Image 1 (spheres, rainbow, N blue to C red):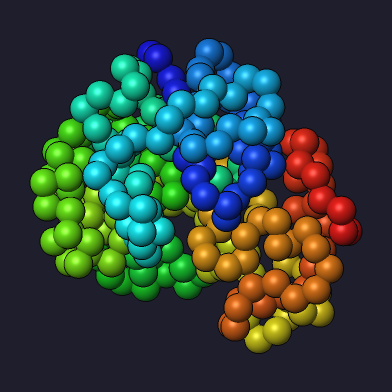
Image 2: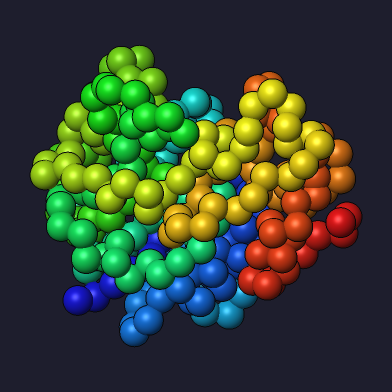
Length: 256
């Protein structure tokens, strides 16, 4: 099986450090052959071994690239993505890789996503599953209806859906979900409420394969002195295990 790890970077929210750290963390947690590709508008500062390809075009205007919803991700589902073929694992840049990624390529499904519904909480609640695209697997070129329908109905889709992952959840064929516990949320599973993290830093999860950072804080926020996050998910940095992770995988920060 031809395996590809994909990420995307555009604009200035994430620097090259994020790509380099993700690349090194993936390399430490995968076996066998694979390609690491970043779809980007700026590959300056990328480490050796990172393949840079242009961002795919799904007809977004300059303003729509930054419209809430991360709509540029839908370019991943084009029928022809730079001629790439194989099974891809897409990983957001603000993810922390803690354990083996090879099993993510083995879970069957047309598009395999994280359930971000009510079950993805410290205390799970009953409720429907909700597709999350922070880390997902799919066969490149195998779900062209997602991109094609968006391109044909872009304005309507952006108005009707909160974000691109809700749209993917509705449009994907053979949608599947990662096993419970593989991907945990920093805000929901690691950070604690009530100001506890302002006094005692949260502990890294023992069993998760991936920590997802969605919204505030970002991983780099945990490297610096001072308050991170937004109420009620607030704490004080730096957090030692994040600093160790960042430097282990080649990241740079000046304030510990």
